[in-house]
Image 1 (cartoon, one colour):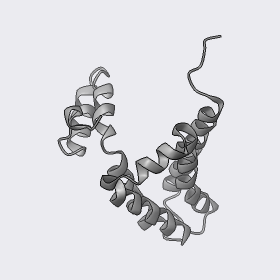
Image 2 (image 1 turned 60 degrees about the horizontal axis):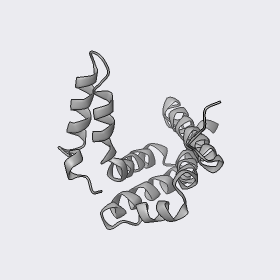
Image 3 (image 1 turned 30 degrees about the vertical axis):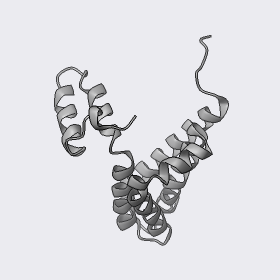
Length: 144
């Protein structure tokens, strides 16, 4: 059996992030309906994502990532989105949370675009779209 490069905590973190993604998809699939049980479980998507991220990269790195000066607006939008979802404003909360995630993780769109650029036929289109979404950022502009 090949050696795994993830620790047990990181594996659990991946499971939490995946569950958060599934709850997010379920909430979107149910059209943010307030009366459905899925929309209340959708409110846990952001919380599960945060728990998973903390387990994957550690508490200090997670705190350092979200408290960086250039990421504070994204952190505030992400937290406000989670709170709005918990206060029964799922669509508005989702949009604000999505904006916060874009601000927080927008630097990774270029990396994802370069990876997706290797897909036959549609890859170059995906790469171009993600680079346009990232606002013309390139890997040369990313901090080390």
